[in-house]
Length: 63
Image (cartoon, one colour):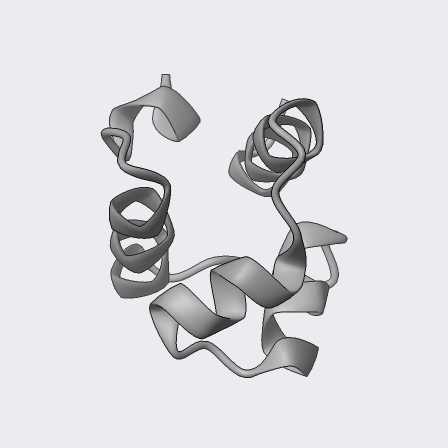
C-alpha cells in the first residue's frame, strides 16, 4: 500500500475531510486531492504537515 493510500485510508476511517486537512496544513485543495487520490506523490514536507495536522507520527504512513 502506498503512502497516499495509507493517508486516504486513515482520513476516511477517522471521518476527516480533505477541507480539514487543507485548513490545518495550508496545502491547496487541488494539491491535497491529488495526493489523497494518488495522482501525485506526497513530498516529505507535505507528509510531515499532514501527520502533524492529524496528531500522529509520519511513520504510520511509511511503515
